[in-house]
Length: 101
Image (cartoon, rainbow, N blue to C red):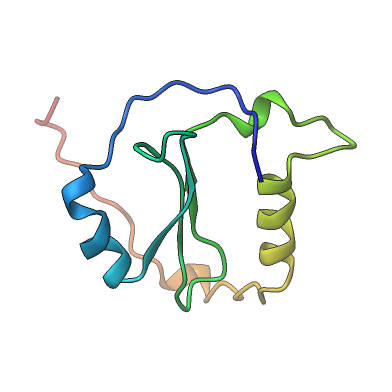
C-alpha cells in the first residue's frame, strides 16, 4: 500500500544497520518509494505500543477523526490498567541546593 503523509527527513537509518536492527526486533514497516529511507518503524515487544514515524500524523488528524496512529495509541492505552498511586505522604520532598543557579 502507498501512504501519502507530509513530512521531512531529519533522521536517517544507515542502510548497513537495517538488517542488524531487524534481527534485534525493530521492524521497518514503511519505506520510501525507492526503498532507501526508513519511514515507519515498529518494535514488537511486551510494550503495548511502540511506533516511530517520519511524517506528521497531527496534520491529518481532526477532533472527531483522529489519525490512525493516534487512534491506535488510544486503543492500546485504554486496554492498560492504570496503576494506583502509592501513599503520597511517603514521597520524599525534593531538597534543592539554594546555591545552585
